[in-house]
Image (tube, rainbow, N blue to C red; front, side, top):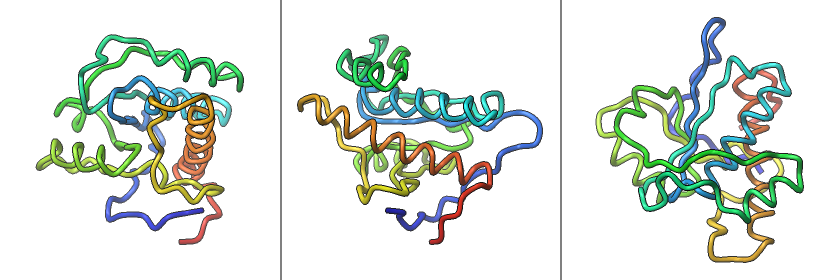
Length: 175
């Protein structure tokens, strides 16, 4: 269910302007574009579409320029979610452009934290915000079957809803 937050404080949703979120996985073709599109969908549904801006990136550049994995797009379509985008690799500039970076697993957390060096942008595991699942990481579904993509979408939906609730002050979670 909910996991204890790390030492990175969440930024606050500004009264003017927008909060910029970056979702990060390894290749930026499965998990992070799904999280980006889900968070955008939930923010729009909650009337926060202009206040919460989302993007995604990968810690490796192998898939740069590629569309999200067709299996992830198909799983999203089954839920009425269009998973779109173009893969890119995270850069040091992203720490200046985004207010919060959300990673899918501990390996990507280490890689992003190492890249951050002296930047103060909070970096958190996305599963820190789940309220209905006990997973601490969003697993990579790339080498598995359809069930893996469904599980990723379950986790991403739960975590993005929990994150949105915390950012908008509607959370009833207790730590």
